[in-house]
Amino acid sequence: MNGFMQSRIWVEPMTQEEFLGKKKPLVIHYSFQTVPGGRVLVASTPKGICFLMPAARKWLPEETLKSHFPHARLRHRSVELHKKAAWLLKQRCDKVRDLCLHLYGTPFQLDVWRDLLQIPAGKVTTYLNIAKRIHRPKAARPVGQAVSANPVMYIVPCHRVVCTNGKLGGYHWGIVRKVKYLNMEAHIAPKENGLKNWEPTLF
Image (cartoon, rainbow, N blue to C red; front, top):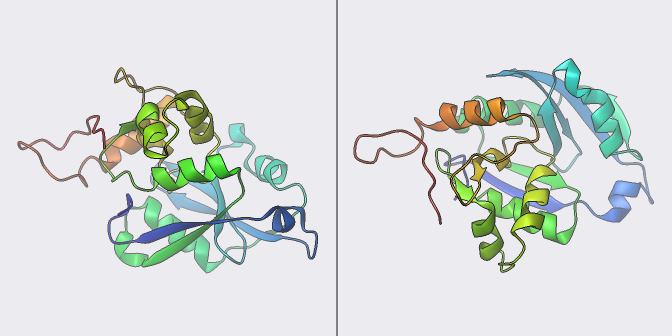
């Protein structure tokens, strides 16, 4: 079960051959979508969503996308996959039956990102707990680095990870945004003792 309830979300690794465009150039379509919290840049390959980030000017979204995929052909055009991603950010899971994430990363990063998808909305876990779950109990710091490198903001819910001491920890797109996402999801979590608040839940 992932954090988007009935929506099925999975990761398909992007091969180095695809990333480098050895046989044919990797074509990536991107568009800007309006979601709660502002506009985001969403990008996809023919296989799935490959990148998602805030579209605020200070983040230089198009330049950042180009730096992540220097060998790809980028085309500014909205496709159906982008609308699916936007529906998820709007918490309209009923609109999205399934979604493939076509992600480029190391095997370790991919393991971490897949594990993040198992954290339900409204709940949080820790870097150390993720390390244990992927059978790398001494790799809490590398887990933190992989979480920070997550290329698909929110859908791969890196905002649901906190420090072992209960502190929020960092967030690539700013701690204010992290808290906003957690608060936005609080109503999704099942009520416990009449409370909706997100609290550390160690799986």
